Image (tube, rainbow, N blue to C red):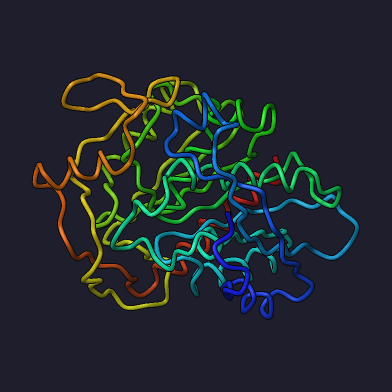
Length: 322
């Protein structure tokens, strides 16, 4: 359910930077975990989320990049990327997963809604855009940052996408310093092309887990690549000096929690799939085992934001020209 119709979404301010854009209401959901999303989607609580769609001039159909924010919600770097992609001739659809859920940040608490809910938002947006005749359904890609990076990666997995959106698929997924602490045992992405980009010095999300996700997708036959950026911290795409976020709750060294084919989370200490297991169980286990900590750095060194822009534009150009 929408938390408050009167809450101001950051998309309203972003609209001023994207002339001709339009606000969307996207019918998403709040699955308690991936098991519910895959096996019992009718029981999910419905959840509208907001989006801002900006298309190039002309009748189209146009390619569109879905932009999914991380734990701080829609902030300046997402707005900058939306403007950059629009100037490059692509449509953009920035989603705001927070406002209608009554969430302002998940930096200190990632359990305010599930990671399955984040992935569902991406697929719901894909379905919404696919119904718009101005959009080229074969050229919809998704770019997600941090928690949003996890969302776009999971949305590419056919184990999740097939029961939720059928034959629809993302042409490309650009996963930006993604959290890869949950991964499907069989990461089938079909024809979607995936690229992961992450900093070597990331303190929020495990670079090793991202590498493991890339290898697993490749071994399953998927088209995937990864770029580990030397010396880069989390959010290195920002024009912002590296700084400490004291209230960040992170556990990058915790074990990956794999998901069975029905979405059940597999306890890494027992190897047993449990359809009742949720994100909070995973995070509590990480804290109890000593992996959790407070405080993590983010920001950029000179030149890294420009490096990111080049990599981002190159990926989406390749996807849309394929």
